[in-house]
Image (tube, rainbow, N blue to C red; front, side, top):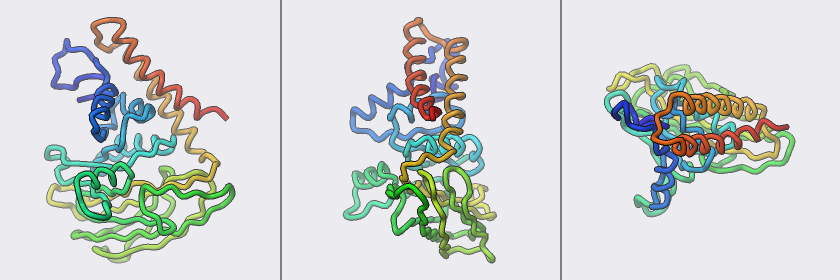
Length: 284
């Protein structure tokens, strides 16, 4: 279902109501773990994220990179710590999987707990593992204001060869390792100098296509560094998210289908609450 509406399968006269944020609330009240899917064009995704409705964020193959990963990286830059997840979706992304580090005796409950804690990587084939100062994804590293050198190791194991591995910091590639010969199993060590609050993740890619015709890829959930000094990307991402919500508010006012003015106000109020949270990040 498209956020702010009931999707393309609904009739033209059906209302854009109730908001999906309310469904997220209902699921969480029943003990559910809410993961947002189809995020790239969804009006309500940044709203649900800002208001704490979500426990993870679905991402798909890199063919979806521009819309899907862009909004995910902006949310992380805005300080919203969401693990990466993924899953099968018809024939376009049928090989996507999320893997969770769930130590101890395995159970569905321990798997979900690991997912909520961000102990994940997503992939359409390769396994990828990241450690930063011997800590795994989902960890928050505390550091004082100044400079903080981090030791990163990325390792991988893949049926298909891997051509390049990247370390992403606050949405930008901070370091890249191009395999001299495509590797199926190896590791790469790098050091990064961190001077602001940051998130770090690893991703890899290969030119060989899998059985669904997609280039192989994998992406870890982030590791976070807390230094008490916001990164410049925070304001830029907050502006991106505020501008998106402003556009959605115009759509709600001019094109949204509601049975009553009260329904329209309910949805607009949710968007305004989220807008306030992102707008606060623009203040010095």
